[in-house]
Image 1 (cartoon, rainbow, N blue to C red):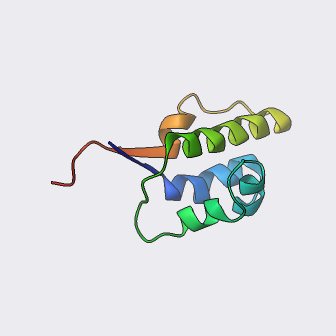
Image 2: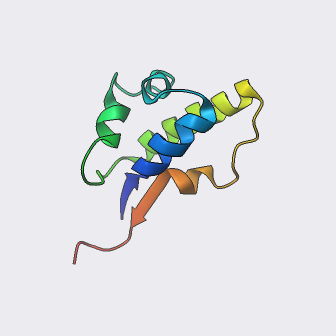
Image 3: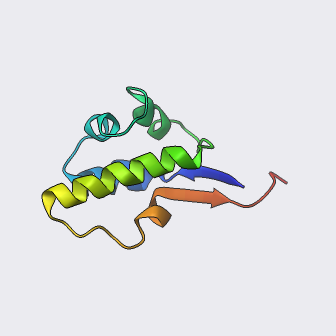
Length: 88
């Protein structure tokens, strides 16, 4: 199974909801500086590890709590696309 970030959701909706830039969200994760921006600017979805998705989810959850906004129940599902095909 291939997992990739939902680039449009993160760059168009999530950062707006969190009142952060992609750069600021990246700094709140344990990802390398600029890594999230690189993933979001790829012309095609990139297979990412679940730990990458988890660290973005955790940073988002902490930020939602900081600003007093109830996070969406389906945040994890909105962050990621799962490709169940074997490329056939």
